[in-house]
Length: 338
Image (cartoon, rainbow, N blue to C red; front, side, top):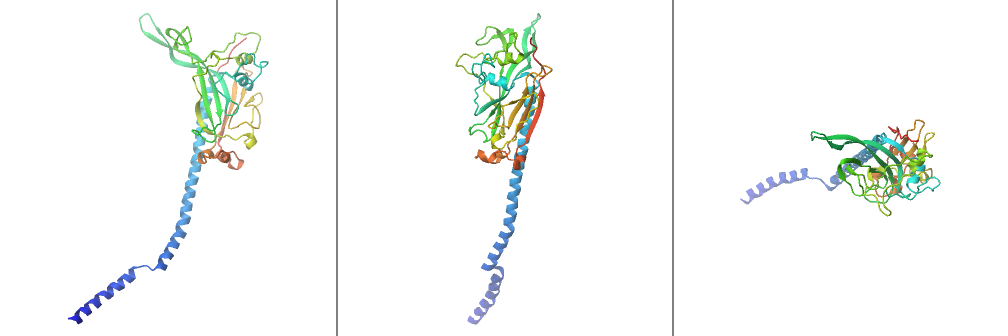
């Protein structure tokens, strides 16, 4: 009996031991397999990371190009309604940085709050636009009739470069506007006005005065002042139109400013100015119309590196990250004055 059990155990255990030996891996085999896997996977992983980085860079460039084009289209449509565009002298009059010999009514800043360091007015103009169905009247049959009306407004585009953490390390463009009201005898009374309006004027608005005689149109427009009381401020604030505008100054290597003959540069020429957004303006052309050249340059690098402004400055070797566009626009109307 013992002999039989010994034989059975012997015959059954030998195949099992052989099978376990054939199905296992030695430590050397395992190490070799790991090394081969590392040599194959590492280049593939590096390739995938490179593809993802390239895709992110190209996407940043595409986004900047689209936003620059959209912003320029918006500014173009706005300027097409302009009746007068301020040149560099006119803007200095409105901001109170010119003397009284140049600006008869120079008495401090007439625009929204601005400084020479972090908020610079680059494009300022008056425009005339339709306000749809602004005036209402009742006919003899008691039916309310609605008529379109023209409205004057003062518009300013600012280039802003500050340390506000809500925005990029690059610069941004903001738009500010104050608009006239529409007088309507059937309307309502607005605060601070005795007339009745169907649409109240914005706080601080006052239409330009062309009644003065013996001075040029430019001097008349440069003499505009708002209707704010001393110490009062506008209720309208600049609204950001587009972010990720190149913040590089000429001294830091940004491309130089170029303006057509007869056009003045805004901001005024200096190595400290930012050229990501600048304009060239001819306030009164030969046909008595204003015209402006608008130049924009984006900063796609600021989308990729968001914590160090010094690393996202313009360089010729990285110009593909700084898409640019420009347009020349002539106002659709003009101001007639004697």
